[in-house]
Amino acid sequence: MSENQDSAAKRQRHERIGESFLKRTRAFGKLILFGEHFVVYKVPALVGAVSAYTDCEVEFLEQANGDGDLQIIDNRPAVPNYKVKKAEEGKEAIGLVLKHFGLDPKESPMKLTFGGDLCAVSGIGASAAQVVSLSRALSLALPKGMTEEEINAAGYEGEKGYHGTPSGIDNTAATFGGVLRFQRTDGDPIFVKKKIAEPIRIVYASTGITASTTTVVGDVKAKKEANEDWFDGLLKKYVELVGKGEKALDEGDLTTLGKLMDENHALCQELTVSCKELDDLVDAARAAGAIGAKMSGTGRGGLMLALTPTAELQDKVASALEKSAPQVWKTTFA
Image 1 (cartoon, rainbow, N blue to C red):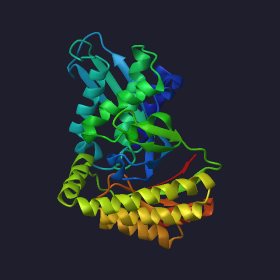
Image 2 (cartoon, rainbow, N blue to C red; image 1 turned 90 degrees about the vertical axis):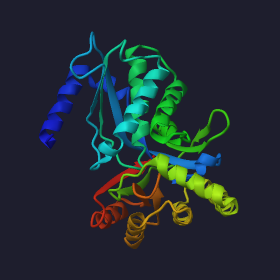
Image 3 (cartoon, helix red, strand yellow; image 1 turned 45 degrees about the vertical axis):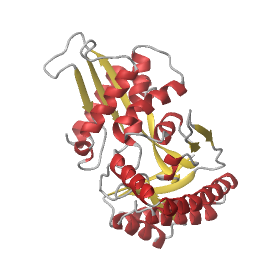
């Protein structure tokens, strides 16, 4: 689909079902400031939702047509091969959300259309945004009148299709937005929305590599089980680091926050979840003046982010990254 055709399709879709309805199904992307992989082991993490979102339309059909009982139209922008590599996980995730709502497409044929402006790429929480937007759309279409906590729980069920045993951080950010302190527990997760005095400017860039979260998380778990002392040492360093990071965030001390982000990237390298492509982009961002830069998300591909407090610095770092990264974005945490 060409850019003009895509724009026309979006315009027609918005006119048909109403912009206000789609707005109510929005779920946000996210970037992890502190906590990749460690968050799985019930220690705090800091995550920021980005302004880009996924939305969803649910249409119940009178009967199945030639496309089957469940039609999925995925109009989300995405990096090359993302949708192909994530196709089976995506189908499973959607199936889990439908099961959570007690829906069987064989009994209730339906058409799901995903859109929005969040570019699907490893590390941005695209899977969580997709299943949370689906949960919002189903809540409106049935209707169920669900609370935000119930939407979040439904999204978490869907995340199992993509991640096996998700931490819950991505769907929580997708649901509630803002900057959050998140901690997994044996029961419901604990999260606190942080108050940010001023929007924090960042740049994030893609390596162009789509990684499997299930595979990388499983590999980290295997390394942990093979050498508990090694992992416990890294975990102890991380817990101290995230505490300092939260303090810097609360105080608006971006210089310290940036230095701690650099340290977090070094821990990710020790954890073996970074890669040359990520390290090169992190180095390029720092060389261009970013006051902190690190990988974000699953790792071994996916995304990195850079802290750029001023508009001028944000533009400078983005320009530097565009020389080597296939995709670069500018946004803010607020």
